[in-house]
Image 1 (cartoon, rainbow, N blue to C red):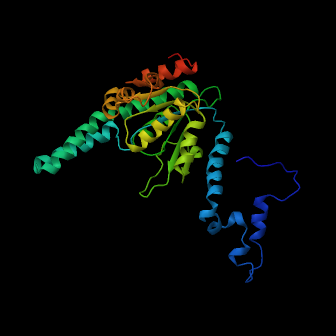
Image 2: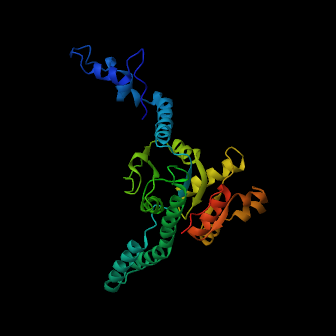
Length: 298
């Protein structure tokens, strides 16, 4: 992070922190009350300090984004469970072998799920390709525009970070602390790999610099992030941007948007807030057209 200049009246927090560690131990200096407040984990983690932690969680990624000159982003959401084609095919082959040895009903269900995973692996490959196209065309001439940003985990998130990495570009990952282990995928740019405690602050960082949002098939988390963005655009709390739903068949089966119009809970024009796309190239055409971008010549 940026450091203040040498000419200053007061000692820096770093200097005072170092000085506080040089104090001769006594009963008084070893008391928790004597700790500097910003070095006192027990103090900082109290429920009453939640407003301060919220502020810190908003500020830290923002300062690092500025330090890395991130001008704008493209958000890519999607399921953490979708696999790349090779992994999905290997799992299917493994289950097929088990079924031949034991054709039980439980294994048949796993076989059907594995077959579906192979079909859905196309989304992993499309997310990977889309991130590569965006990165190759936008991160050039020393500018960091339309930088791919994901939730930082596996599945579609990994695919998007991977595509940017393979294009030699930066990408961002916004991980969240969960009860079960979640590690950042290996393709995120390390200095742009963040970890959040608060879902609300994480979702703000998804949208602060967003110039487009691409939602691949996913579960509750994907739906949550998608509908929050649509609500903010619908109510004009954020500026309009392309919201692309990848895979018309999936989205129309999962969410009946037309029924919401029929029931009068959204307006017919609200259906124009998003578009369906089927390929990485089609998604890039929407993003490039809206943002005035042109694809680099081959």
